[in-house]
Length: 208
Image 1 (cartoon, rainbow, N blue to C red):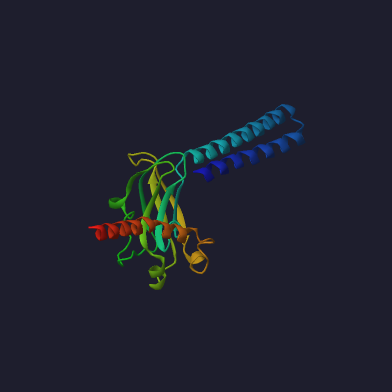
Image 2 (cartoon, rainbow, N blue to C red; image 1 turned 60 degrees about the horizontal axis):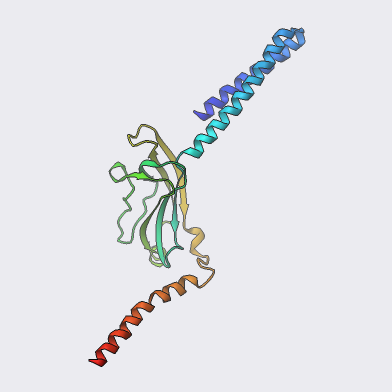
């Protein structure tokens, strides 16, 4: 629809330019002025059309699907986020190659209408556990996936949109995921409360 509108505007602009040239040759000033006015009007309409399209794009949902291997050490997650300025409804995914989970079952949480998400609000992110990164690589799964994200702009599903996507783990497989020891430090800090509880329990047992 967007391409068709632009082509129509371009076609009318070319026709108006040709008319300008012909009337300039004929010294038909009145028709020349009319043709120039038409070109100016078309240019203004073109600019307004582009502004409208960009504003519409900014107001629409912007869904992004990707792998997350950094939020939790050695855990592979699939994330689905809406970075747009409006909610997306009836969200589902059609995979070209189905993603396989830890238990060797296909990832069907978002697949098909029966598993679609009713609404994904603005700035909302959903996280799905897939596998440990070590096991996922060891099983020699496919590392690149593609498909289509389906969603609608209203609850009734009248205005559907389809967005192609490609995600890959190839860039993570042989690179350093963590440039600092912060994640390992946090992991060790989480063990402190358990260690303190064990010490407290042991002291209480000795005092009884």
